[in-house]
Image 1 (spheres, rainbow, N blue to C red):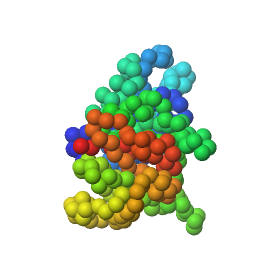
Image 2 (tube, one colour):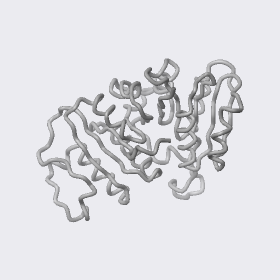
Image 3 (cartoon, one colour):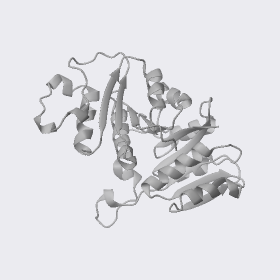
Length: 280
Protein backbone atom coordinates (compact mmCIF):
# COMPACT_ATOMS: atom_id res chain seq x y z
CA UNK A 1 0.00 0.00 0.00
CA UNK A 2 1.09 3.56 -0.62
CA UNK A 3 2.57 5.44 2.34
CA UNK A 4 1.82 8.93 1.05
CA UNK A 5 -1.88 8.86 1.95
CA UNK A 6 -2.90 9.74 5.46
CA UNK A 7 -6.67 9.69 6.01
CA UNK A 8 -9.76 7.59 5.83
CA UNK A 9 -12.23 9.95 4.15
CA UNK A 10 -16.02 9.59 4.18
CA UNK A 11 -18.66 11.56 2.32
CA UNK A 12 -21.41 13.00 4.54
CA UNK A 13 -24.74 14.18 3.10
CA UNK A 14 -27.01 13.86 6.12
CA UNK A 15 -28.61 10.58 5.02
CA UNK A 16 -28.79 7.60 7.32
CA UNK A 17 -26.61 5.65 4.92
CA UNK A 18 -23.86 8.28 5.01
CA UNK A 19 -23.89 8.33 8.82
CA UNK A 20 -23.61 4.53 8.93
CA UNK A 21 -20.76 4.80 6.41
CA UNK A 22 -19.09 7.37 8.67
CA UNK A 23 -19.30 4.96 11.59
CA UNK A 24 -17.69 2.23 9.46
CA UNK A 25 -15.01 4.69 8.32
CA UNK A 26 -14.26 5.64 11.94
CA UNK A 27 -13.68 2.00 12.82
CA UNK A 28 -11.44 1.59 9.77
CA UNK A 29 -9.45 4.69 10.70
CA UNK A 30 -9.02 3.36 14.21
CA UNK A 31 -7.87 -0.03 12.90
CA UNK A 32 -5.33 1.62 10.62
CA UNK A 33 -4.35 4.35 13.11
CA UNK A 34 -5.16 7.09 10.60
CA UNK A 35 -7.11 10.34 10.92
CA UNK A 36 -10.75 10.35 9.88
CA UNK A 37 -11.84 13.07 7.47
CA UNK A 38 -15.55 13.91 7.15
CA UNK A 39 -16.41 15.72 3.93
CA UNK A 40 -19.70 17.43 3.08
CA UNK A 41 -19.77 18.51 -0.58
CA UNK A 42 -22.33 20.47 -2.56
CA UNK A 43 -24.23 23.73 -2.39
CA UNK A 44 -26.88 22.94 0.24
CA UNK A 45 -27.40 25.90 2.62
CA UNK A 46 -24.91 25.79 5.47
CA UNK A 47 -25.81 26.60 9.05
CA UNK A 48 -24.05 29.85 10.13
CA UNK A 49 -21.07 29.56 12.38
CA UNK A 50 -18.57 27.63 10.29
CA UNK A 51 -17.18 24.15 10.73
CA UNK A 52 -14.75 23.22 13.47
CA UNK A 53 -11.99 20.65 13.71
CA UNK A 54 -12.45 18.19 16.54
CA UNK A 55 -8.68 18.44 17.04
CA UNK A 56 -9.12 22.02 18.26
CA UNK A 57 -11.44 21.05 21.11
CA UNK A 58 -9.83 19.97 24.38
CA UNK A 59 -12.99 18.98 26.23
CA UNK A 60 -16.25 18.17 24.45
CA UNK A 61 -18.15 18.72 27.72
CA UNK A 62 -17.02 22.35 27.87
CA UNK A 63 -18.06 23.50 24.39
CA UNK A 64 -21.24 25.48 23.82
CA UNK A 65 -22.62 24.64 20.38
CA UNK A 66 -25.74 26.52 19.19
CA UNK A 67 -28.72 24.22 18.63
CA UNK A 68 -28.85 25.10 14.94
CA UNK A 69 -25.29 23.92 14.41
CA UNK A 70 -25.82 20.60 16.14
CA UNK A 71 -28.54 19.90 13.60
CA UNK A 72 -26.11 20.26 10.71
CA UNK A 73 -25.28 16.79 9.43
CA UNK A 74 -21.53 17.30 9.27
CA UNK A 75 -21.22 18.80 12.75
CA UNK A 76 -23.54 16.23 14.29
CA UNK A 77 -21.57 13.38 12.77
CA UNK A 78 -18.29 14.83 14.00
CA UNK A 79 -19.59 15.22 17.55
CA UNK A 80 -21.16 11.76 17.70
CA UNK A 81 -18.05 10.07 16.33
CA UNK A 82 -15.79 11.98 18.71
CA UNK A 83 -17.77 10.58 21.64
CA UNK A 84 -17.77 7.06 20.22
CA UNK A 85 -14.04 7.17 19.34
CA UNK A 86 -12.41 9.66 21.73
CA UNK A 87 -8.85 8.80 20.66
CA UNK A 88 -9.58 9.27 16.96
CA UNK A 89 -8.24 12.31 15.10
CA UNK A 90 -11.34 13.72 13.33
CA UNK A 91 -11.35 16.51 10.75
CA UNK A 92 -14.65 17.93 9.46
CA UNK A 93 -14.73 19.92 6.23
CA UNK A 94 -17.43 21.44 4.04
CA UNK A 95 -16.99 22.47 0.40
CA UNK A 96 -19.33 24.00 -2.15
CA UNK A 97 -17.72 21.92 -4.91
CA UNK A 98 -20.21 19.40 -6.37
CA UNK A 99 -20.08 16.00 -4.75
CA UNK A 100 -18.40 13.87 -7.44
CA UNK A 101 -15.44 16.17 -8.20
CA UNK A 102 -15.01 17.00 -4.52
CA UNK A 103 -14.92 13.35 -3.50
CA UNK A 104 -12.60 12.42 -6.37
CA UNK A 105 -10.20 15.17 -5.27
CA UNK A 106 -10.41 13.99 -1.65
CA UNK A 107 -9.68 10.42 -2.70
CA UNK A 108 -6.26 11.45 -4.00
CA UNK A 109 -5.22 12.24 -0.41
CA UNK A 110 -6.99 9.28 1.21
CA UNK A 111 -5.94 5.75 2.01
CA UNK A 112 -9.57 4.79 1.44
CA UNK A 113 -12.71 6.73 0.49
CA UNK A 114 -15.95 5.55 2.12
CA UNK A 115 -19.47 6.22 0.81
CA UNK A 116 -22.94 5.11 1.85
CA UNK A 117 -25.60 3.22 -0.06
CA UNK A 118 -29.26 3.39 0.77
CA UNK A 119 -30.03 0.05 2.33
CA UNK A 120 -31.68 -3.14 1.26
CA UNK A 121 -34.88 -3.24 -0.80
CA UNK A 122 -35.78 -6.91 -0.86
CA UNK A 123 -34.54 -9.17 -3.63
CA UNK A 124 -33.40 -6.19 -5.69
CA UNK A 125 -30.47 -5.69 -3.33
CA UNK A 126 -29.54 -2.19 -2.24
CA UNK A 127 -29.50 0.79 -4.61
CA UNK A 128 -26.30 2.69 -5.18
CA UNK A 129 -26.72 6.34 -6.10
CA UNK A 130 -25.14 8.06 -9.09
CA UNK A 131 -22.64 9.85 -6.86
CA UNK A 132 -21.37 6.62 -5.28
CA UNK A 133 -21.13 4.82 -8.61
CA UNK A 134 -19.55 7.82 -10.31
CA UNK A 135 -16.87 8.11 -7.65
CA UNK A 136 -16.24 4.35 -7.44
CA UNK A 137 -15.79 4.30 -11.23
CA UNK A 138 -13.19 7.07 -11.34
CA UNK A 139 -11.38 7.37 -8.00
CA UNK A 140 -7.63 6.76 -7.89
CA UNK A 141 -7.90 5.03 -4.53
CA UNK A 142 -10.05 2.21 -3.09
CA UNK A 143 -13.69 3.17 -2.52
CA UNK A 144 -15.72 1.28 0.08
CA UNK A 145 -19.51 1.29 -0.31
CA UNK A 146 -21.37 0.71 2.96
CA UNK A 147 -25.08 -0.06 3.02
CA UNK A 148 -27.47 1.67 5.41
CA UNK A 149 -27.98 -0.27 8.62
CA UNK A 150 -24.44 -1.70 8.76
CA UNK A 151 -23.52 -2.31 12.42
CA UNK A 152 -20.14 -2.89 14.09
CA UNK A 153 -21.07 -6.46 14.98
CA UNK A 154 -21.87 -7.23 11.33
CA UNK A 155 -18.16 -7.42 10.53
CA UNK A 156 -17.40 -9.89 13.33
CA UNK A 157 -18.12 -13.53 14.05
CA UNK A 158 -21.50 -13.84 15.83
CA UNK A 159 -21.22 -14.07 19.61
CA UNK A 160 -22.85 -17.11 21.22
CA UNK A 161 -21.43 -17.09 24.76
CA UNK A 162 -22.59 -13.66 25.92
CA UNK A 163 -19.18 -11.99 25.52
CA UNK A 164 -19.04 -8.44 24.09
CA UNK A 165 -19.41 -8.40 20.28
CA UNK A 166 -16.39 -6.07 20.03
CA UNK A 167 -14.12 -8.87 21.29
CA UNK A 168 -15.22 -11.40 18.65
CA UNK A 169 -12.87 -12.20 15.74
CA UNK A 170 -13.42 -10.46 12.43
CA UNK A 171 -15.22 -12.25 9.64
CA UNK A 172 -13.15 -13.09 6.54
CA UNK A 173 -12.17 -10.59 3.88
CA UNK A 174 -13.27 -11.99 0.51
CA UNK A 175 -11.33 -11.14 -2.64
CA UNK A 176 -12.75 -11.66 -6.12
CA UNK A 177 -9.77 -12.12 -8.41
CA UNK A 178 -9.47 -12.35 -12.19
CA UNK A 179 -6.40 -14.49 -13.02
CA UNK A 180 -5.93 -12.57 -16.28
CA UNK A 181 -5.54 -9.20 -14.56
CA UNK A 182 -2.31 -7.62 -13.37
CA UNK A 183 -3.74 -6.72 -10.00
CA UNK A 184 -1.04 -6.12 -7.41
CA UNK A 185 -2.90 -3.09 -6.01
CA UNK A 186 -6.06 -5.16 -5.63
CA UNK A 187 -4.33 -8.14 -4.05
CA UNK A 188 -2.24 -5.90 -1.80
CA UNK A 189 -5.31 -4.07 -0.54
CA UNK A 190 -7.07 -7.32 0.31
CA UNK A 191 -4.06 -8.80 2.13
CA UNK A 192 -3.42 -5.56 4.01
CA UNK A 193 -7.06 -5.25 5.07
CA UNK A 194 -7.16 -8.83 6.30
CA UNK A 195 -3.91 -8.32 8.22
CA UNK A 196 -5.14 -5.14 9.90
CA UNK A 197 -8.18 -7.06 11.15
CA UNK A 198 -6.30 -10.30 11.91
CA UNK A 199 -8.95 -11.87 9.68
CA UNK A 200 -8.63 -14.74 7.21
CA UNK A 201 -8.55 -13.92 3.50
CA UNK A 202 -10.71 -15.96 1.12
CA UNK A 203 -9.73 -15.63 -2.55
CA UNK A 204 -12.39 -16.58 -5.09
CA UNK A 205 -11.22 -16.92 -8.69
CA UNK A 206 -12.30 -18.66 -11.89
CA UNK A 207 -10.29 -21.52 -13.31
CA UNK A 208 -6.74 -22.13 -12.06
CA UNK A 209 -4.73 -19.34 -10.44
CA UNK A 210 -0.97 -19.45 -11.05
CA UNK A 211 0.88 -20.14 -7.82
CA UNK A 212 3.09 -17.12 -8.47
CA UNK A 213 0.10 -14.77 -8.15
CA UNK A 214 -0.35 -15.06 -4.40
CA UNK A 215 3.05 -16.46 -3.34
CA UNK A 216 4.80 -13.09 -2.73
CA UNK A 217 1.81 -11.81 -0.77
CA UNK A 218 1.72 -14.91 1.41
CA UNK A 219 5.39 -14.27 2.25
CA UNK A 220 4.73 -10.59 2.94
CA UNK A 221 1.79 -11.38 5.25
CA UNK A 222 2.78 -14.67 6.90
CA UNK A 223 0.26 -14.23 9.72
CA UNK A 224 -2.73 -14.12 7.36
CA UNK A 225 -4.62 -17.35 6.76
CA UNK A 226 -5.42 -17.62 3.04
CA UNK A 227 -7.99 -19.93 1.51
CA UNK A 228 -8.46 -20.23 -2.24
CA UNK A 229 -11.79 -21.12 -3.84
CA UNK A 230 -11.62 -22.04 -7.52
CA UNK A 231 -14.84 -21.64 -9.49
CA UNK A 232 -15.49 -23.11 -12.93
CA UNK A 233 -17.19 -20.32 -14.81
CA UNK A 234 -18.76 -17.15 -13.42
CA UNK A 235 -17.52 -16.50 -9.86
CA UNK A 236 -20.31 -13.97 -9.17
CA UNK A 237 -22.75 -16.35 -7.44
CA UNK A 238 -19.95 -17.76 -5.25
CA UNK A 239 -18.86 -14.25 -4.29
CA UNK A 240 -22.43 -13.26 -3.40
CA UNK A 241 -22.74 -16.39 -1.27
CA UNK A 242 -19.41 -15.64 0.42
CA UNK A 243 -20.45 -12.03 1.14
CA UNK A 244 -23.12 -13.31 3.52
CA UNK A 245 -20.33 -14.56 5.80
CA UNK A 246 -17.75 -11.82 5.16
CA UNK A 247 -16.74 -8.58 6.80
CA UNK A 248 -15.69 -7.03 3.48
CA UNK A 249 -15.88 -7.99 -0.18
CA UNK A 250 -13.01 -6.69 -2.34
CA UNK A 251 -13.43 -6.41 -6.11
CA UNK A 252 -11.31 -4.71 -8.75
CA UNK A 253 -11.77 -2.48 -11.74
CA UNK A 254 -9.30 -1.60 -14.46
CA UNK A 255 -7.77 1.87 -14.03
CA UNK A 256 -9.51 4.31 -16.33
CA UNK A 257 -12.65 2.18 -16.49
CA UNK A 258 -15.72 1.84 -14.33
CA UNK A 259 -16.71 -1.42 -12.61
CA UNK A 260 -17.84 -4.04 -15.11
CA UNK A 261 -21.30 -5.64 -15.05
CA UNK A 262 -20.21 -8.40 -12.68
CA UNK A 263 -18.71 -5.95 -10.19
CA UNK A 264 -21.76 -3.67 -10.40
CA UNK A 265 -24.00 -6.61 -9.61
CA UNK A 266 -21.88 -7.48 -6.59
CA UNK A 267 -21.97 -3.86 -5.42
CA UNK A 268 -25.76 -3.89 -5.52
CA UNK A 269 -26.41 -7.31 -4.03
CA UNK A 270 -23.56 -8.14 -1.61
CA UNK A 271 -24.48 -8.68 2.03
CA UNK A 272 -21.44 -6.78 3.33
CA UNK A 273 -19.54 -3.58 2.49
CA UNK A 274 -17.81 -3.69 -0.89
CA UNK A 275 -14.36 -2.23 -1.64
CA UNK A 276 -13.79 -1.28 -5.28
CA UNK A 277 -10.05 -1.11 -5.95
CA UNK A 278 -8.52 0.31 -9.17
CA UNK A 279 -5.64 -1.64 -10.66
CA UNK A 280 -3.60 -1.88 -13.87
